[in-house]
Length: 73
Image 1 (cartoon, rainbow, N blue to C red):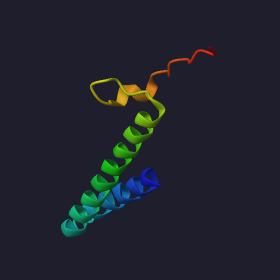
Image 2 (cartoon, rainbow, N blue to C red; image 1 turned 90 degrees about the vertical axis):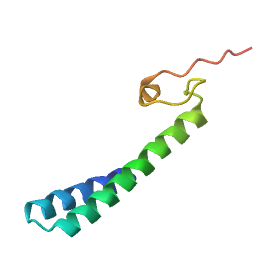
Image 3 (cartoon, rainbow, N blue to C red; image 1 turned 30 degrees about the vertical axis):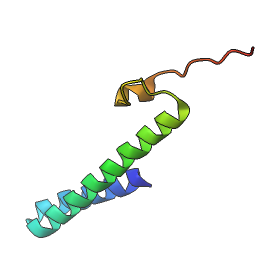
C-alpha cells in the first residue's frame, strides 16, 4: 500500500511541478517522502522479524541476503 501511495504522490508532484503549481508540488512531495519513510520502516520491521538483520542494524542490502538455514536437530 505504501508503494502505491508513494508512486501516486510522486506522479502528482511531478504533474503539479510541470504546471508550475508550487504549493501543491511541495505538498505532494512531502506526502511522498512520508510514505517512502513508512515503506522503509516496514521493510526494516519485516527484516528484523525474519532475522535477516546484522547485529549492528538493518540495511537495504539485508533485504537480498539469504536467511541462515536452521538445523533439524
